[in-house]
Image (cartoon, rainbow, N blue to C red; front, side):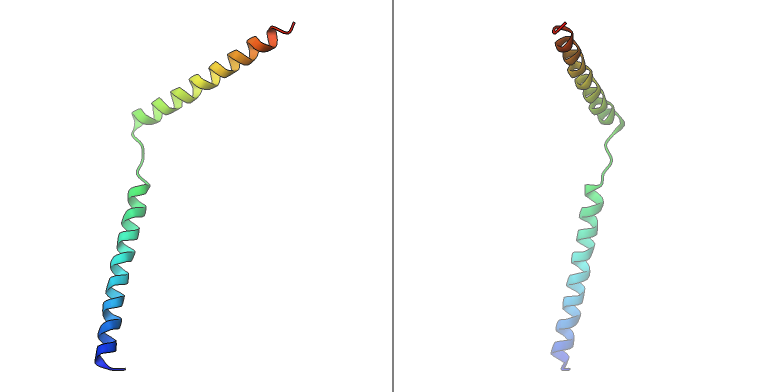
Length: 65
């Protein structure tokens, strides 16, 4: 191989390593944890919504009697 080809290969390897580092950083950033308050708020809303739906279903069924 010529010297120019070896230099190009080295540049490509360095660029690939930089890209791999950036991909790893993006993956790490996307896996951020939610705060405790946001998890509590989301859980509260889900439980409230399920209770609201179940009360509606119970009242709907009790109207058929």
